[in-house]
Image (cartoon, helix red, strand yellow):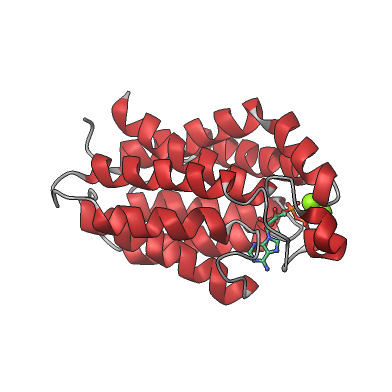
Length: 210
Ligand code: ADP
Ligand code: MG
Ligand code: MG
């Protein structure tokens, strides 16, 4: 497996952009069902801006890559997801600090910081049918994953848990964000932000396994 270093961080962001682009219509459809239908477009715009920035100015560290992503997502994505993901990447950058490469505890700390940032900004709890329902099991799985030296195993456990968490949003009734305006009618649909989170965390694994 590749080291979880600055080259990995750059591959993670590029792979995130690729999968968000690939799933753009799916995210739009999910958000059309319980929101305003812009999540795929919002995220695609933000990640395209990240790729453009990477092309002109390669990041010097993992933290610099995450911080740049935070700035782009805050300025380009808009809606609820822009500030939430922006805060997540900013807190993740701070948690990573000056580490040249991440081990499993550093992966767990990075994901926990991201999740905590989303919760402090958006005030959603687990079960409210938001991206928090993908982040929270991911954080728990990364923290429980075995060998400290195996950062990829922690990422893999996080991505698996996020995918399950996103699937598990389907029966939930939304209590935060636009979907909450639908009340009971929000049940029966996946939360778009939980799905985009699971795509982004899977991209972290792909970027490390390639
Ligand atoms: P908007 O709802 O403003 O159009 P997006 O469609 O880009 O923004 O993002 C919607 C996603 O944001 C939801 O699917 C949900 O995961 C997430 N979200 C909305 N409000 C919150 C919140 N308070 N806390 C956490 N996540 C939230
Ligand atoms: Mg929307
Ligand atoms: Mg919107």
